[in-house]
Length: 501
Ligand code: AMP
Ligand code: ZN
Image 1: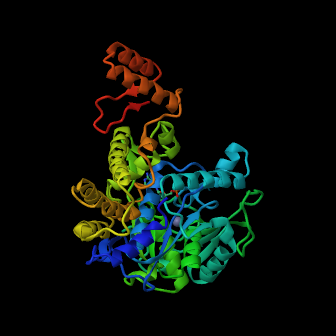
Image 2: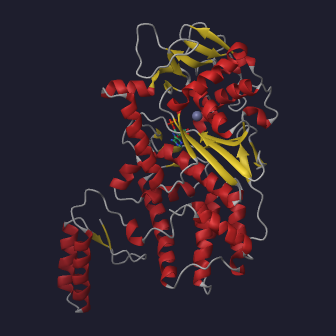
Image 3: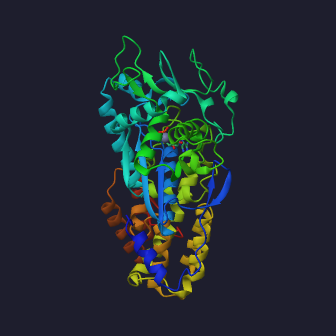
């Protein structure tokens, strides 16, 4: 949906009188805890790596917030004219049940529980994740890197840093965090403070040291294991992202993204490995961390606390869809908040986001009835596009950008084709599918509903006729019939929605 349109529209905008004064793109770098003007490593290009899911289970909608955020970042970079190379990885080996090097491999554990092959499990949940990516109108990255396809490169990377930065224990090859300057700066912790959050392993030199290669214990056989100079085993999770990002994008690349939890352990460890690999020293030069800018989205939370795949109702995107919500209502919900703010999920909030999306889609439908989009928005829209650009360039302020979109929608006495072009330009960044989805797509229709839509429409037509004849008894009877089958007729709905299941 709307994939190529971003670039076409940008070209059109450049030629049009709109947007004469583009704003500089400023992004919040977690490494410096400051807003910084984006300066690409390679002129005209933007190279972005996003930590992808561990495919041992379905992603929850909190996980998907991380990819909506990465998508907005990517679309914004395209909108600003950068040639984007976005990479997202799929972790199909190595992520332990505890981020900090303890517990079992999540994939192995799930495979044992389900008595299935890890490869089948990875396949199944990768497909499920990709379905959510599509449903949320997240653009395909240039490349999905699958961890198990990079094991030789991981071994090579580890071999290169092993002598100076690592030591071997019975359980694996460990990275000595005291061998790099500024370890933990990203998390704002120092090595000694790592204690407590990391399970003790006999022989570790520093509490924060982590395994980059995990040996298979003697007498055990893992489903996923490879030979290495440190014995048969599997790569550590942190190693994977360092290797895949460096391999595909080259060090230093521009931006590394992930959820805020990764700011604490996973990314500091990646940074330490990158420093070791690139033979750089301290982190005062941002390029020394492997990526110049590290960006983190805050969490989606439930009222009861942190979202989890194991506790309570498992909030998958499919659950929202089964309850009748269009998945883009969830995207709208994400965009209403700033990515660095915590966002609380509620069904009411989702309902409100759906109504907001409906308003936009209905306004677009009315415009479409009056003709096609113009090749570009005219001068009348320049100030709006500039404000939209200023908002999105201000560390991806999507909530302000949405209000500018609302203002454009509300404009009276403007050329409808040009207005459509302005909306399309903004939606190339927001990705709400405004020109593609239809009002009917946004009706709440739970999977459990037992009545077909054509039938509802037929009964509603009879009811309309009855009302035209002032036969209110029949009109009410038809309304009751629908109610009996779970269809609520909404006469007073300001949006003109005739029914809801
Ligand atoms: P995982 O599959 O656990 O590696 O997580 C995939 C992505 O989702 C990572 O970038 C996490 O930081 C992010 N993430 C995990 N939980 C949440 C949440 N509740 N809200 C937002 N992002 C999250
Ligand atoms: Zn990662």
